[in-house]
Picture 1 (spheres, rainbow, N blue to C red):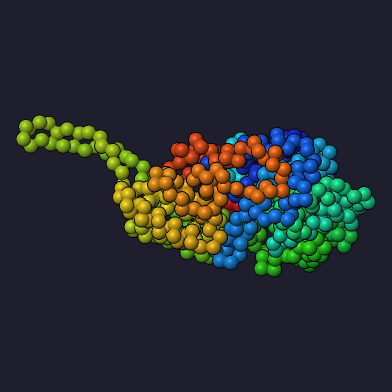
Picture 2: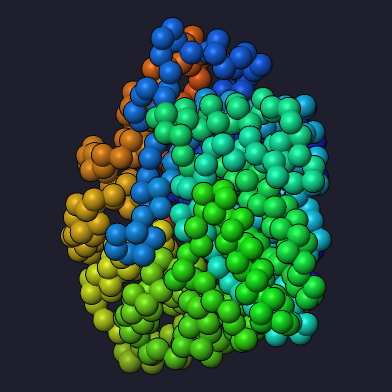
Amino acid sequence: MINKAEKILCLNHDEAMDFFLRSEQYHGFELPEYFVFDELLQSVKKTVGETPYEECLQDGVSPEQLSDVNLDILLNKDGRYAVRPIILANPFLYYFLVREICNEQSWTIIKQLFEKFNVPRITSCALPVIPKEEEYFHKSATILNWWSSVEQRSIELSLEYRYMFVTDITNCYGSVNPQSFDWAFSLKGTEHEQKTENPIANNIKKYLRAFQQGRNIGIPQGSAIFDFIGEIILGYSDLLLHEAIIKEGIKASYEIIRYRDDYRIFCNDRDELENISYILQHVLESLNFRMNSKKTKISESIVTDAIKSDKLAYIYNTPILNKKGCDFDSFEKHLLYILMFARQYPDSGSIKTMLSDIDKRIKDWLEPYEEEVTSISILDGCEPKTKKVMKQRRLVGGSIRAMAAVCAQIALENVGCCHYALRVLSRMVDSLKDEKEKSSIVNLVYSKLCNQPNSDYNQLWLQNITYQKDKKDETLLYTMRLCCMVAGNTDVQIWNNDWLKPELQADVPFDSMVDDEILTNVTPVISFRGKRLYNESFQDNIDNSDFIFVDSY
């Protein structure tokens, strides 16, 4: 069985700071493997140290007054108009926030706060987890934690309970009322309420305004520290919910699992379950949150409803991939299946898994193999000679140009999964011998994906494919600021630091965020950090299991 991951609260304040200042925690979304931010973050830490925030500001200038303080990226959530804004946080502001959370005094108070949030019958599963070793893939420890703590636990609870209420919060992070931090730290409205004002809450609000051009609403997305401070509010809501349920006099047995803004409530009494759901609604409303009516329901089919709908569809509809091969006789049919699946479940974790499946299938198919060849000389009458010859298969079932078009369409309609689609595309295109055909396909894909609004994330991954050729031809196709830095423009300003005293940023190695050694060796075939495939990682971690399916967040 999987060992439960340790949560961040088991660390001391110094260890917690080191955790948040790791590159993989700094950006919660996947980037090409040549982006590494450890040296940059450590340099900021060394340069700023314990200098008070106000002493680091230029006279009369505040980050709240400026645009482009962070690098903003919009990810499409549904392949259409729903977007999720994420940021690559300004490293100085990021450090200030981490320092505020992880100084010895604050960390002690926060740990005590979460002890109060840890109430009977409500389990929060969303605190950042500590990877025990190098992660197999981006956020693998977090994903495995979700699978074991939420999905598997929900299925287990189907043995004890008949009904499950499920819901989530609409635009949770974007709806956070900053004043909620005051309420959370003072435990307002609970039996533990304190009347004294907490400076930590005020400082968190200050830094959030700095991140968001002075906007006094919401929490940014894109880093582990934002998830953590979000849990302060959501943990506080757990305490409020617990005490409200007691006050209401609920007698029925129940259990609640919360993962960030996703709730699952289990109970054998349907009427009492509905009462609990109304209590939850009231608690959330008091914190400026709204239930998502489209995702709210009561289920009697806990086993299946505990699993995300896209995952279930994958399980009962996906072609069989096993030792004997695949149900699809061509790669194009396989890709078309993924495209149609993605239109039903846009930007879902299942798409990443399906694209990983076909990528492995293509990779294995293209692997050179030995074949014995026998030749007979008719002229000299010698004995037949047998030798081993290395051969390589060609992709079957459609032209590579056509299959690349399908991959490009998947990437276009599922921006959060675009790098998985482009990895498949890059592997297929790289197998071509005709260099002109390679360039033609890639150029067309570039035009299709990058001449679109909000194409920054696509640009980041397409550059992975074209970098070597761009360098050889001395061309710059991409406008995204990180892409410009990869192309060698070290003068490009990733973040607007005009609010910061010049001496503090003078010696900070901004160019270190691109690892030159990795970049030099980058190939036109996209690769990800760590072990490349989900299945492999699960088999290393889980005994007696042939296959486990996990969503990617």
